[in-house]
Length: 332
Image 1: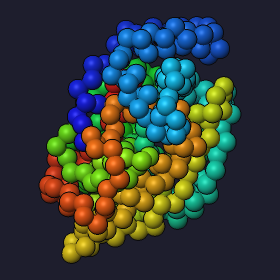
Image 2: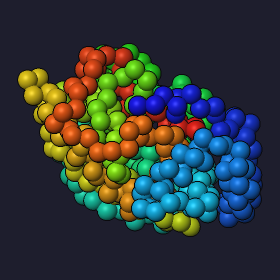
Image 3: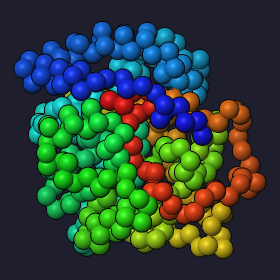
């Protein structure tokens, strides 16, 4: 797994984020969206690595060579979701057209008082999933997030909605402390949300077939789920243009079981199954992919999972490596 997403310089500063926030609050969402066109053009022209990563991803998901306008559209969609964070976290959820599917599975678990893990990704907007909980008071939401990865954006979001900051479980703490914090939350019947599509440098991962190539996914979230024995839901907040977002929830597994003697085989099947679901939704909303770095292994060929190596490293050492709001090459 390339460490390039960690090494990318920030795509914005606290001043830049604050300026966008001020303009959005003064003139509103519509006029501010006009600024996205020059911002997108600058980003596409100035950020070569991200531009190339976008083109490589789009060529995979679209099944044809990506054109310049495809890359521009990709970055513009990303910019639009970043802008919408200002309004989502500012308590203006009613201004959006949210179409929700599968939330019954979530509420079913919440009504039982049972904790749930909700695994998200950098496909679509995680904020719109987070804000859904504000409209449903019965859902106690906690978000696992490494707040140190993007201080500028983190400070902005905290300023917009201090209540959200109180729901964060810091993924930067040591592994045992993080696992205990997640367990305490699920024991209290909370929905604990985390992003599970990026591998932190030096952390255990496992390869899977994804969009015609080999990609690595972190093992720690699945090991956490197997320890806690709570249901795992997948959540996607897909931007459809204008004011519309589709919020999709699906039950992944009611109880992840990973026996020590069959650890490799179990992880192999679970992670490939997750990669298949992520691929399904990526094809359904191709411009919602916000991993602007080389997500795939250098060899562009499918792997034989039966021969894949066992993920290295202790099960939960060094934290779960699951969250990171910092998008490769963008971080805001």
